[in-house]
Image 1 (tube, rainbow, N blue to C red):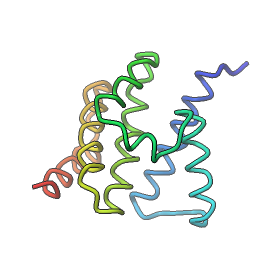
Image 2 (tube, helix red, strand yellow):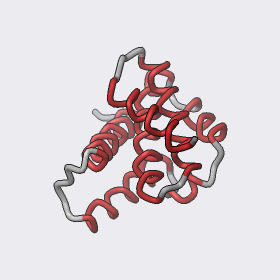
Image 3 (cartoon, helix red, strand yellow):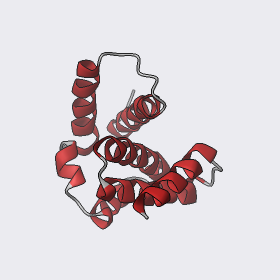
Length: 130
C-alpha cells in the first residue's frame, strides 16, 4: 500500500524528471499539457501553486522542506533547484535564479552526490547574477 509520503515523493521525482527534460530542451508533450501537469503537481506536493511558493523567501521554503522527513530533503532540493532554475531562466528572473542556486547547493550538500550538471548550473547562475 502506498502512503501519502511515498506518493508525494514519487510526484517530486516525476516533476524533477519533467523539469530536467525542459531544462535540456527535450520536451515530449505539448506545452499546454505540461502547464496543467505542472500546476497539478505543485498543488499535490505543496498544497499551493508556484506563485505562492515563489513569493516565499528561501528561508521559508527551506522550513517547508525541513518539515518533511530528512531522507527526502535531497529530492525536494533537487526539484526546487530545477523548478526555480527553469522558471528563472525563462523569465530572466534573478530572484528565482538565486533561489535555484541555493537549492542546488543544498541538494549537493544533502545528497553527497557529485552531480556535474548541477555544478555547471550553479556556475551558470553565478555568472548570470554578477
